[in-house]
View 1: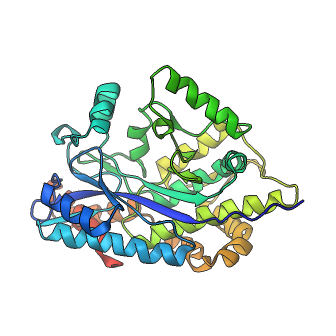
View 2: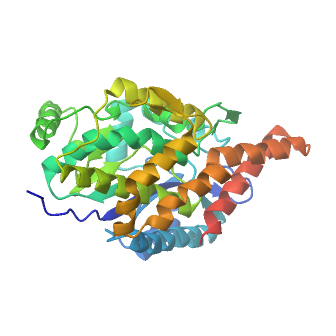
Length: 377
């Protein structure tokens, strides 16, 4: 018997870095800026672990159109308020040249506890991410969909890559952020779980030992949200361009609905071992969209453009029903123009070829990131 269709509502969370418009180095957020953004955005703005970071979150959105309006408003407000302090936000997962040793963590009990619990590992957490929530009321359904949806996480990661530089060096990776984040406990791909009860018992075991307070300390790439009746995708780098962020959200929403739709026909996506999916996760982290991902069904490395073609075919019906066909099709534009990692490297290369110093070439990358953030506002 067919089940009631979930809402597939959307929520997008993004973390930004604040830079000084003159030096282009990171800058701690002044208390007055935090107060102004908090007042203007009424519960949709908060500090992050480091003083140079802030976080925004959209409202619960019925569709990608609502998400677009709200995300644009949030991004514009942060930019406007930051400008009053000669600061600018950038939506990149790593700052191209700043040193994590120079940053201070935000003085809040939650962040003080993180510092104490995770020691030197958390001090390096000069990274920003993008989280997408998809509304699924049924808890067991959430777990079942997570088991299947994680196959597509490397594809989403590859499109999002925005962290090729770390402390002034080209890392050779398209997403260096995960290299830092994966040093934390309880990260990476989620384990296969049979039902909500199994997830709840696993979390409770750690809570009862006073190792964690609650499920917010479970930092998997994809998890059942602790606060909301949602699936929360956490795999992606944050995107300088708002259109990329909306594409990633629409793809996540459409893939989730596609898997639900299969279940209504007593079908499901094959569940692959994390060992195999992790290989694609690494390939996405290393190469972004520039090299292929493994098609485990065909036992071949498939060009990334072919992978996107296959995904868009799979979700065409769902994107149409959800009203996000334009956004998912924008993934082809990302393939054409490159990811943020590709564009950052191109800016850096162009500056070096023009005779700029190493430091000035890196500053050119930050200036480029500022411009990309503001381009869609």
